[in-house]
Length: 64
Image (cartoon, rainbow, N blue to C red; front, side):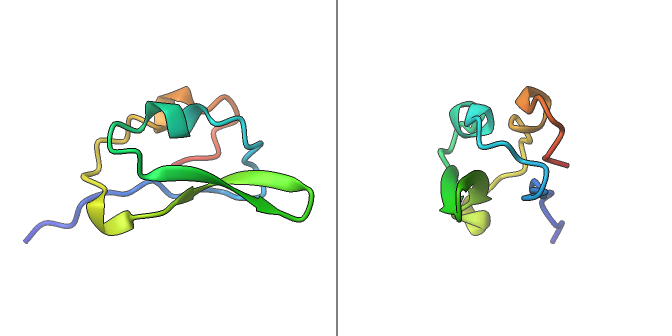
């Protein structure tokens, strides 16, 4: 069994722009509020197939 790569989100770097949320074909990313800031969260990591379509759309490189 091979391990599927999943996006790692740097919450401190994420600006909450939502581009990764829009790019995810499985709609597995969402924005969450923490204090006065928003950041992306992978809500269903088990369903992520590792397409990584979210990575190139992040303007601040908060996803790896």
